[in-house]
Image (cartoon, rainbow, N blue to C red; front, side, top):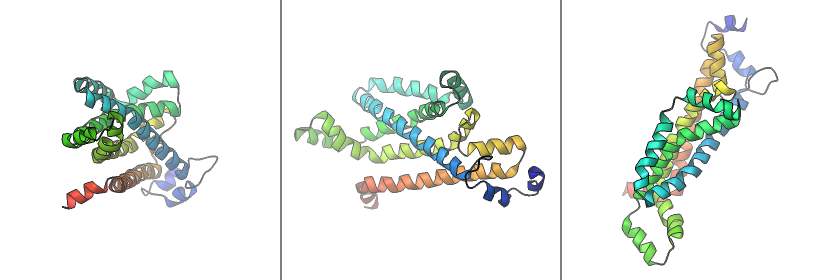
Length: 229
């Protein structure tokens, strides 16, 4: 038996090589990577698309900030298993359910960092932009958001890494990327898929974080020069 043969060690390389490419009878590491990465990217992008407008509104009307963060905080504290179980009757055992849950968990981190980034823009810079005749919308797009990028990207980094860690939970509803290997290892008491699922998830999180650091430096080179001085 496979399990018996693999029980002597944590990593059975023959199993790994047989699961690298697509197969009609088994999970594929490549396909799981594609699903894990796409769920992460899509949920973070969707969450940021929702979070930035909310942060702009909250930064303009500060009385809304406390209530908004409180509501998002309640969503964030809902256990992931309970949230996905709640979503299944609404959208089924589907990718949509996975994306809704993952996006919801990202909102608190992203909105909080977006608000902090917009609040960090110096008031004299905003006044100067207004004095030059910029409309509030143009000032937001050309001045405030670019200057807030370090805080915004920091939030995206946290959200991305936490999403990579959370995606395996969606294996409970038939999604999950590398979480499917983790489930297989736990159900069959087979160490190799468990090691592969955990190791690949960690590697993906590290790679995503390093990529976002590089992106932040490219998008806001002035913050790097300011830190060096």
